[in-house]
Image: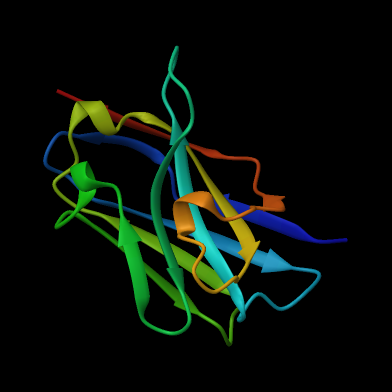
Length: 124
């Protein structure tokens, strides 16, 4: 049974930080693209960040310089460090995994596995 389990969400004031974790089990994801997505109330889910092939990363423009995605393959875990949080970052955050395909950007990858989501709320 493949599972992705997020943790680390919560309530934080604007300007604060949170670190989300996504623990994977059931298979090894070292060769997968690991991504973070978010969905705010009344909005569509949007891509936030992804990491693959070692150090390759890609970020949503609005989080560049504030968010950092990292992974620990030994622990089969991916992280999203979120700094300088803004109220507009409020959303449910999901991690997801997609098989790596050359020339396919992470925003268009086929994410087969999803976590249940963790709520992030940023107060002004």
